[in-house]
Length: 335
Ligand SMILES: Cc1cc2nc3c(=O)[nH]c(=O)nc-3n(C[C@H](O)[C@H](O)[C@H](O)COP(=O)(O)O)c2cc1C
Image (cartoon, rainbow, N blue to C red; front, side, top):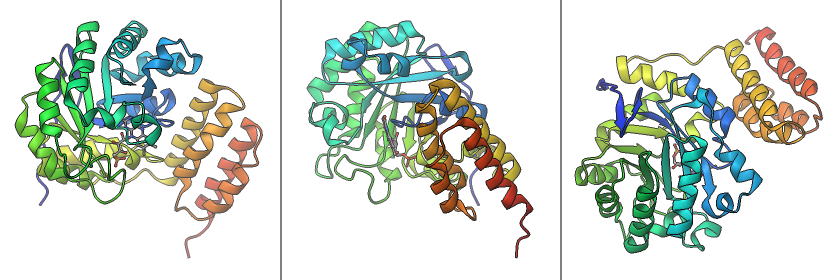
């Protein structure tokens, strides 16, 4: 018997979130089109891709575009990464002026090129510079500040609870915890019970993250971690309706079926249109390929679909290919 969870609104400073089921930040994925879709399926908060504070402060065109916000995706947290408190504070100010409702600090990115600059998960190795960055950002902006962390650098240095306490004492409004250490990268299984230690150490809301692939996982994770909410990343790739299904399950304890193929086609098509509208050509075509591959993954003929997709050169060609793919599935009798 799965426990029903009361899905209350969550208040982060003055920002009221409709529910505590969030879209996790994912570089190269949680752009404006994907965030809009996740919101349309009920995600209580969407988080931008990680934006380099250095690049934003240098006024890089790409970063400024990534930092852009729009009404449909609200409430939106914009995530920044970096290691210099002055630059991070300036980047936070820029994001606030561009409309971010919340500033999120990346303290969990495990990638070598990020950690070698002292940013991302590297900040968990030494609490003093981490505290300086947090304090500088909290002081710089009037919107709420949140932090996304891992359990620690490695299994010998688990310090998520300690970092969370420091963050809380510095004025942070919410902590999201990915239940892995940096050295685990994405391997093994996320440890939801370790997130409970963070929850017990602080009074600000704690959001559990890692390996939530289904509504049942969400419920189990909430039960084990006793967190105030959850954050879904990879589970929503090609399945943004997972937010709706998860909210339904957490409220009622009952499964909600995935949309039928016709509806899945409509969502994939809409996502494609959002992407090409936002990025234009040819970038939109390239960026849409991975998403369309995720939507069609596991469906009959998807390998051939992906191969053909890689040869498309226009919006109409992609639309036609997508239409034919789903039409074939819908009209082929199941043997
Ligand atoms: C492709 C990819 C990009 C990611 N980019 C970010 C990022 O920019 N910032 C961040 O804090 N976490 C990032 N993450 C980590 C996710 O937010 C999340 O913590 C992790 O994927 C575990 O959750 P999941 O199992 O629900 O995906 C990324 C993960 C993936 C797979």
